[in-house]
Amino acid sequence: MLFHKPPSPTRSRRDAGHEARPRAVGPRPNGPDTPLMEPAALSRALRHAAWRDPRTERKKFTEVYSAVRTLERTAAYLDQALERLAEVAEALRIGQTTEHDLMRGLQAARIEELLDSLDRLSKMAAEGGLNLLNSESDSLYLDFGHEAFRYVLPPFDLRRGPKGLNIPQIKDGFENSSEIQTISQAVALAQVRVGQFAARLSHDAGMLVRMAKTYEADISGTGEDDATRDGTD
Image 1: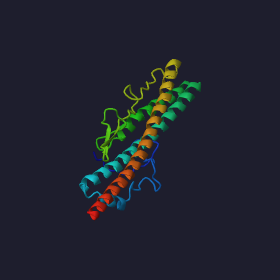
Image 2: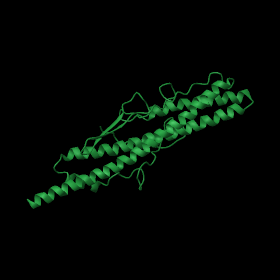
Image 3: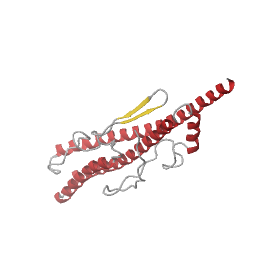
Image 4: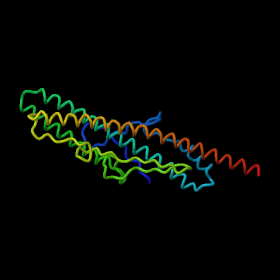
């Protein structure tokens, strides 16, 4: 499993033709473009792992870096989705307190446009055949370390339909108070679910960075032990 580093995205409040700016996730003191492990550290780990296939070791580290980049990229789209949902919640509140039918109709149309943008965001998150914001995509798998630790992250469906956030359409404008209440509750639940998945991405990215550092230290220690035994013999 190997993900290619995407081009640096730019953040915009509108979807068309723009991508999101990666959000810093995990212990990244020098910014999102800073390598998770310095090249010298990686080379040292590979030298100490001479008893293994260096190409395999390099591939493992590259996969970890790529996975973290994927989590960061996905988190950026979730940030945009949370902004859209917040705007929907505000539009629902305003629409219910507006007396003029024309303004209420405009609010209803705006709400539908914002909710439809969730589907567009889920499509934009596709990268190298993987899309963590579409349940029809594969999970993210990562095998790592001596004990064949497997990290698995199933996709989260960001789409507004029944398979995703399950936010119904506005059929009767603001004339049906029961319908509006149902939509408001669905939007509130969607905000919670999206926020929880974003928090998991942040946690998992930090965990993967720590694992990479631990693995490097483990490889280095093993290589030094082997060298010591060779010198003793």
